[in-house]
Length: 373
Image (cartoon, rainbow, N blue to C red):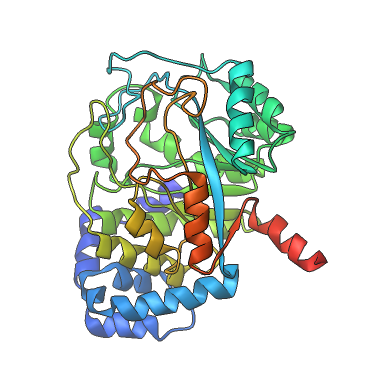
């Protein structure tokens, strides 16, 4: 279990180690053909700030070498805003007195038809964490409804048991996103005071259960703004390194969500500037050339326009963060406010204008198409 590896590292010592990195450490990391976790510390450290242009150019080349000039597009499909957890940063939190909505099978299909017309072939199913309302049976039914219409189906829901992930994989589930939110165990409970999500270790063990269940792709990340972003990303990198060693056939992705306005939301404890987020994205690419890096509509147009050339490989477009938000019930409560409100066509046009190709399916299938053409 990863918890044993995590416990070997002290949070404050990790921060001190990152802040102690020098320009020499950064230069040495950038000159290495393969980089380790100490190099990652150097690349995300304050000492790396003057190296941002060099890191960006290197990240650009490394991304093109592995992924070509392509950006994969996906759409989140929110199925429910019902949730049994209290989380201080989320609009779906149980203590928010809001109207709850869970899509029926017919409504799921209606939303799917809308997204299919927009061109999507890769969707991410999102729910609050309410096992009685949107448990495994509900998710299996949703996947059954959607499988004939989409090439790739991912989920971002409550952590499940290993056998439950296997059941969903048998129905056609491709990937699972599960964010630890923060690896700061002592403060984790502050942000998650009630509900199953308050169990730090159970959530931390979820990627292990996913790996054992044979899920094709696992997405990780932290919510930037809760705790020190450098330390949290070091622990994410530690987690990915552990998973790649134990589940080497699985693919991995990293997301970079920043706290956005939402009903009942706390203010960010720690801010990250756009330049620092670019530094972080480039550091991830130089640390791991195979990993997918995803940028959602939490970020604004200008940032997303530029980041596609700096290491990002996957983007959402035209997103709605409320159940039924595309066509069923557009006015239901959003989980958070999006910042890039452009239409799918506008995002697609931006990608093409930048000299990149928008991809609607998964990379593996795209590679197969290229091989046959």
